[in-house]
Length: 324
Ligand code: A3P
Image (tube, rainbow, N blue to C red; front, side, top):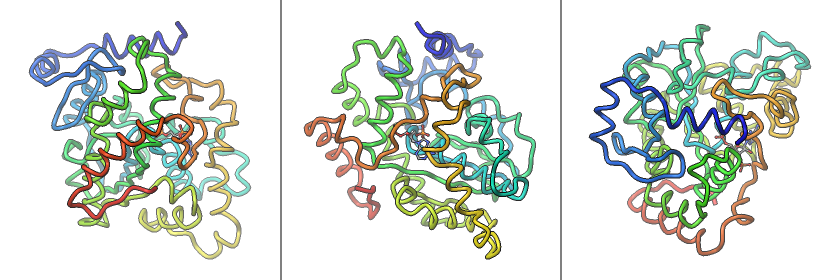
């Protein structure tokens, strides 16, 4: 067993629940899983117990401030990238170009941007606070829903997100993953029984909210950001009310931020090759190929079709479409 495997398995299996949480767990629907022994269904979405505990804790204790920014996503949809971009955008006045000394050069984006359901949100006391979460819209802490804080949601096509999750889980080598076939994991993903699943419902709820409340939620597609980073980074800055000035554009600040946060740059940094997060996860696990349509190298046509069929069914009655 590797160190990260030991720590993570321990976290997933032995998380210390308070009585209230234990009672709730025993009342929830559960499903055998590859992420922990069981996933539990809470408010329509599925969680391993330690993450559910984090969700419940955040629902009770997270106090959003009006100026806060929350990066939201389903796992493996570009969270790490968006965290880096938002951090670099918001604090760009503090670091002059060329960006030779920048916190992102020595810190993994997950260290700089605390996870709402990760119990470490108290560590963020700057204003604006930048946080991230995978919590579905309906289960967000009330203070996030009620305050004018802003949400940037990153969405990715389900086949690439699934394949990214598959490789990530294999890399973590949890004991629950031993003997898990891709067919079984696709089946779980498609019936919604996946970490923070159903994947489609998660995206659709935020997409709808972004249409109804565009000042509150910006809906961003991973693939569109990959294809047109300049446009999208500018759009995110506008949404966060920190638009680039002409002088900044002329001085190459936008390009510098895109380069700093690129997969190519972040993945080669020592902190992202050899580092570990506080929960024991190796930082290198968050960086792979970042390809659009990379699922073709991993999914058989039959499994791809299963995911497509679920996508088709889930989108009935909606004008929303995933990228490719
Ligand atoms: P792949 O596994 O397809 O390569 P998350 O950050 O939500 O966990 O998502 C991880 C996915 O985003 C991985 O996709 C990873 O390679 C990709 N990724 C990580 N950092 C990135 C960056 N700076 N730019 C673009 N993609 C990035």
